[in-house]
Image (cartoon, rainbow, N blue to C red; front, top):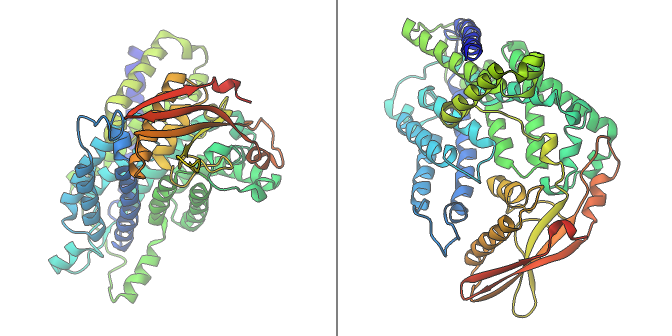
Amino acid sequence: MVLAVTVFLVLLALAVPGARAVVRRYATRTESGTGLALFRMLYGVVLLCEVAQYLRGARLISDPLPYLVPGSIAIESALVAWLAVILMLICGLFTRAAAVANYAFGIVFLSGLHGFEYHVDYILVGTNLLLIFAPVSRRLSLDARLRRTPPEPVSALWSRLFVFVGIALVYLDSVFYKWTSPMWTAGLGVWKPASVVHTTWVDLSPLLDLKWLMLGLGYATLVFETLFPFLMWFDRLRWPLLGIGLGLHLGITLAFPIPWFGLTVVALYVLLVPPRVWDALDRKLGVERDREATLHLPRTRLLAFTAVFALFLFSQGASIIQSGVPRMLVGAGGTSPSWRTTTRLCQKYTGVFAQPYLGVTRHSVFMDHHFRGHEHIVTLVYVDSEGTETWLPLYKQNGQVDPGNTGRFWVEWNFRVVGPRIDQDRLADGIRRRTAFWARRNGVSLEDARFRVLVKSIEIPGDEWEEGFLRRQLEQPWHEAGAAHWSRGECRVTLAPIEAVP
């Protein structure tokens, strides 16, 4: 316990001076509020799409058996209210109140989510918290128009704070896992995930078959994410960081079925656009400001800024301690009772406070273990009374993810219902839930409805680059693995052992 307390005090001691230095440098510098305003609108549009998708699948999330066994709470009305709040944010109407409500909705529907949560949720929670306090409605908002006050500059610290919380901390934590990953340290961190059939929705084989490109992108991504938390503070590096970051996350949006994750980070990267761009835009709009103006912030405001930075730094430090690298650095001490106590304390802090309320958590995503053993794809096909088949929007016929099954819904089916290790009961329950949901949404009666369960066996890429790997997996055939028969509102699922299917 002494070591646990000592580690926490060291983390805090490191966080506070670093936060103080950042605040001292950027807090009193001013820049146009146009950048924050455009970020507010772009981020709001992406969040609107995320919540709209959430609403579309609300019954799948909340009902034990969609539409047939309703959940204890009907969440659709609350989600509609959340969409209205997001629209207010986008328009900049009653912005502060809308931001508070938006954060509260996020805590309820993102932090309290089980089974359908995925990684963008944490970025959304942290960003939503900052929106409450940031002056995002000074420009291009209905609030500004109603106030009829001249456009005021904003502290340059705000744009850096959003980027720090939404991007830099994510990178900072993730590289502690990537530098211990055989996949990433071999340069395969881009090629391997993009070559796994059921984690992609676009066939990028022409690019994947260029070894020099794939290995180059893999190493470049690893180096970029490692350096970004430190380089983001240098004004002269904004354009290079912006270009690389946009390329990285637009690439994620193109390759993987998590579009709102990729576009959320793209919206955050907009805040790295140099202030002179916003100044030029302001001049075109007839708005002038004193570029040399400085803000006089009360001591209490400066202390508050410092506290926010320190809190996020400290919280991410508690998450980093849970990764493998710190344990390796302390050697044999990593197996000592004191270190285990420290790790448990950090896990408790992260789980109870940092993750649900700050969006700060571990970022061990797209790692080796996500693909190991996941050598099967399971999908469903509806067969009507005339024998006509309709593939449910889970996977396309080549095995890649269907556009109707992205984000949290793909994560739930691919990793939790199916997963690398098949649990027959869990899979059968998932089949009942997905077929009930699809049938109701598509006007199919469950009085007598039949579904085929198909399995495609695939290979997972190894530890070396291979030409044509994805194309070979796309050509693998589907095999019959069972059936689901709905009769009078009851569903009987029969399954062969998935691992035994050819």
